[in-house]
Amino acid sequence: MWPRFPVFAQPAGHPPVPGRRALQMCLGLVWLLDAGLQFQPYMFGPFFVTQGIKLSTAGSPSVVASSVDWVSQLMLQHVALYNALFATTQLLIGCGMLFRRTLRLALAGSIAWALAVWWFGESLGGIFTGASPLAGFPGAVVLYALIAVLLWPAAQKPDGQALARKPASLASPATSGLPGGRWANALWLVLWGSFAYFLLLPDNRAPDAIAQILSTTDGQPAWIVSLMDGMSSLVGERGTEISVVLAVACGLVAVGVLVRPAIKPALAVSILLGLFFWIAEGAGGIFTGQGTDPNTGLLLILLAACYWPWRGASVGVPAVPDDGRSIRLPYGN
Image (cartoon, rainbow, N blue to C red):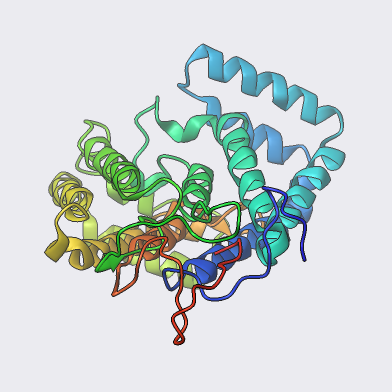
């Protein structure tokens, strides 16, 4: 018997909703990718701080900029040591999600670490500077925290049985998790609604705004440069029209999860938008030797998978074997 500490998970059988455990492992693999990127030689030098973290403060409120500057100066004193600690932290989080016993601890660490990096590493992802969703708004790392919250194992009774809830004809890993369906849908609505709003800001709907984002290809391999340059030429000076179309699409995605017949089409559109955002972001610079994460596009695709409904799945209902006797559901679903 495993000790029932709240942050540890017992070896589990099948989860109430298909896919949750697989998605938890996918999030862990993304953290492992981040750890690998953080171990790149570039990250052990001062330019990681001076050309990355410090530059992200441009246009941020003073309370954000001053705190990030303080952390930057602290890091520059022993940048190699601090970077090794950062990379190791991400490595431990990623590995922790691959094992059920450490799943909850890893999810808790993911939330805490992601929020800290979002503030001190990304200056809150440009939410106060009007950043474009095609350029990484609202910051990739905050999506790590969001996904970790949505995939937190559903609450269970002390004796190991799941809390009794109504069966759901359409349930997803996100809506059947700890926050519950209403909060999960509210988070989705806020996220995609903010995409629509930020795409319509004057700077982001300028005729050449999208083309300029797609033209940022410094250090990228030839095949990404070719793809982004081709899309930039295709967009040209039609940035205003494209921004409006993207904003409308994001708005429809935002409300689509609230209408049952529209859930899957809305999620499919969100996956396509996430893929487009990821291309515009140059895959987060992960092939340049200077990228720290895959940026928001890939995380938006993973987030959509968290909301994908499974017909006939139930939410938090104790499993019953063929002989009619209830069985105990272990932690870590």
